[in-house]
Image (cartoon, rainbow over all chains, first blue to last red; front, side, top):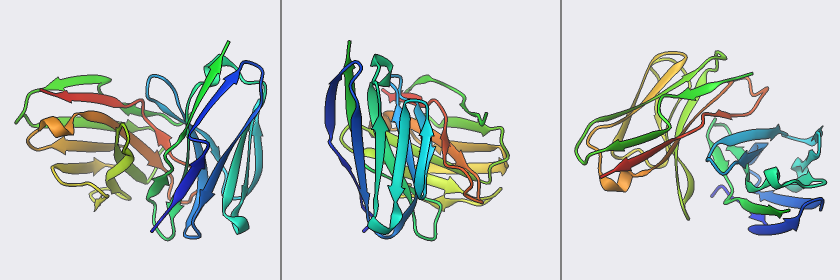
Length: 109
Length: 113
């Protein structure tokens, strides 16, 4: 079936550190998206990245669709980056978004 | 900015009550979705709609129904609330042309007692 796998499941950083989160997906998943869920539960769309690289401030993402993975880079992490990061992809031929289990990031001051 | 607004942030209902969760988006998106999120189970799709009056079942539709009478509004209905429907409910919308991803509302934390 459809699979979206994220690693690591948990990550603890000191403020200022850099990190890389990985998402592997099956060949029937496309239109990769990255979300950040804040402590209040809201999911914020960080990147819509079917392929290539995008940057937004301290965050950037790269998707290599031919090799079925995507990476989210967080540089100079801040305590406000804490939360759960999800990657998700659309099932081929549908609009249904399939989520990975997430990476829980804790950034300590 | 795209905005998806959910009518309630927190809701407490009694077992057996009929519950309406409302979601409104202001960017003319064709697609709208309802998910629930539970610890250890992740996000699960309940229903989605790709057009007015159109609906499709997601992965866990049992105990729920939906209504989409207008393009901007997608309602989730719990016909007879049960304690196992206590959860965080998240609404989302997306454009059909896939030029952008999903936008989620801030969620409704429903407790059924």
